[in-house]
Length: 119
Image 1: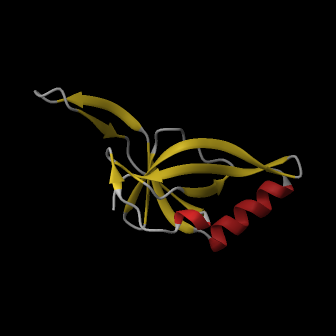
Image 2 (image 1 turned 30 degrees about the vertical axis):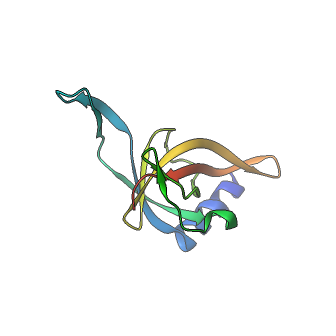
């Protein structure tokens, strides 16, 4: 762990909110052809939550996806992936983008961009 990763992890642990995330572990199809996911057991961690200003509006559901883009900053050693389900404050989000977030060209933490899938 670098000094920057240590500082970022410490800040996330002290200032962050508790979230859980789960990876899809399989799919099932009902007799009507509707697909549903089964999820792995939940991993609990802390994350700094960031909601862009333009996203702090009321959203309506269209096509099963509810707006509400959020960014979650997790400790550098978390293994979250695109398509994982994140639960924060009893609301579910789907991870759209996962990247190693850098500061001064040094890897500091994991940034996850996600959209809300439930109210």
